[in-house]
Amino acid sequence: MSPEVVKDLAPTGVLRAAINMSNFLLVTGRAENGDPDGVSPDMARELANRLGVGLELLQYKTPGEVADDAGTGVWDIGNIGAEPQRAEKIDFTAAYAEIQATYMVPAGSAIQSIEEVDKAGNRIAVSARSAYDLWLVRNIKNAELKQVQGLDASFELFVNDKLEALAGLRPKLITDVEKLPGARILDGQFTAVQQAMGCTRGLGAGAAYLKEFVEEMKASGFVAASIEKHGTTGRLSVAAPA
Image (tube, rainbow, N blue to C red; front, side, top):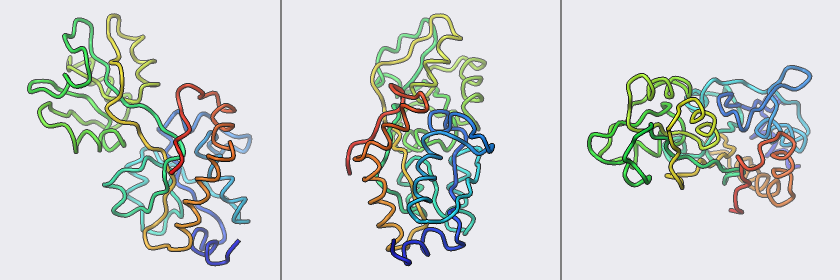
């Protein structure tokens, strides 16, 4: 391992990895020592092993908070969805896993397809600053986005204010739809959240190695094995090679 790579990615001698605790597919529980466990922590642990350094998993409530600390020296790598807005401060790898994002509509809704959601008069509940919210901000032209903090809050807003659609990750919507008789999840996806690893922009050797690392983890079957181990097969998919 190049000393330059280690210096870039673990300047304190410990890899400080920012983990988005709100992603229930990537963080599925706790390890014996109380640290977060799941595919995202597995990726951070394996990277620390490769670098030959210790690991500190920094727990964040939302991906937006991870992005806020980019470039401040608080964390060395961040495990969140790759988005153009976040890429202004974070040098992302290609995705190691993908999650479909789609809509749920209430009982009796006339909306039958994803394309029909973006029409004047429609209101979409969404968890603010999630990767799919950032996509919607860039792409929704006619409907109105109703942004609130957190997945549960977006569901409550959708129900309480009788909104026309709820945007979310398909696996979470599959759980939510069971709470609302007659509600439906629309076929297809408006985007796929690209779960990636990232570091502060400007780290030449470190950033290059991080990208190689992610490709190796996909090709070797490490990501697939981690998905299976944590019980998220069918809800989380290994991303295609870069």
